[in-house]
Image (tube, rainbow, N blue to C red; front, side, top):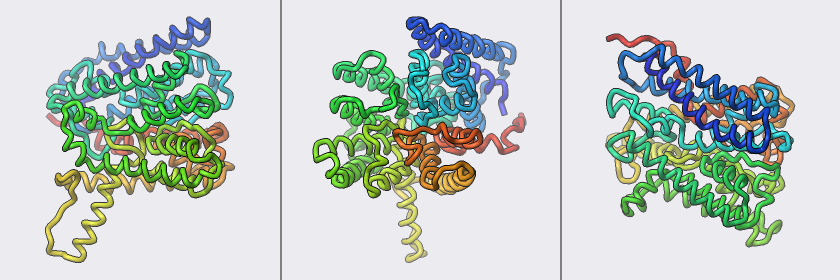
Length: 483
């Protein structure tokens, strides 16, 4: 384990997060929210002080392997969540640290689950920081770090950092160099966010509303700045947000292929076609289901918005879907599980993993019928490695075990089984709202300290896709490598 190199990169992450807190401090200063401004300045100073460890403990070598990548990703996200919660505590907007940790973890992991019940207690600076955590967490702070500088000894070492943070069963570089891939990803991410920002401004949103909504949508996070979420927005704004939620749930590699005009590769991408198919079928089914409540035009808008919000794990709400028929609510829970595309800012199990599992099931059935037949799992016409298939099976096992254990712990709180299960699924899949008390008009404030900590860990497990967090508890990972 290259401890010195991990320390150097963690310090770099601290400096990045500290720099991104500066606008929040300036916004607080502009609105004369001095206590909030001081809370950000104190936190910034603390992070910069901690980052000085990189000057004392300089790495002797820059070699970086897979285990260092996993450890770095896990420690970075835990560190960001803990330190990012301090402005909430220092400003008094969320005085209890566990509540502030829950809110910040929800922000960075783009979950959108909230303990806030009174939005009037949140200052302008806090509202900005709360939404910005979505934007930074959407593409990932380590990917941003890679887009600035190469920290590893070789081009191949950097992929371990990107692989540990990027979602999906396998991570591919857009171009041969990891740094170039990171820059392309963030370039597209920033570009799409700016386009959405302009469209929101044209729709009559003020700058604060447009910026926070654009950041929450881009990161597929779902933190709103009002208790109504998106329900009080115009149909135009809801369509813009709904469409962009869907777009940010697409693998960013598809957008790169569009820039390269590789249309054949796009049209043969099974994950994209399945993703779009799910949108069409789910939207049509829910529209028919809620037609008596809304009519066709409003029903189509409400259906598409909630399908887009839940399927991409954003968590915005244009209506209280707790009041929808059981079929519609059940379908939304199923969309929570499937999630968005790999390589997107969306959460969930990922469409690509679902496809691999289904193809693997078909492969095993065929092999049972014809034992001597040699076959393998294919995606987009290419063979899926056995390592990827095995990883997907292992991920499913870990995923199910985490849900079962977490729901069991949550059962000590006075909530229904439906509320506990959907709360767990919503946090592990980085979605936000569940059903019942944790639905679009509710919050997680009623859960105990233990449950909030469990759900916070689930958010981190979901955002980093389980294995990087679990690896922290493997003793062999921390052993120093032999020269």
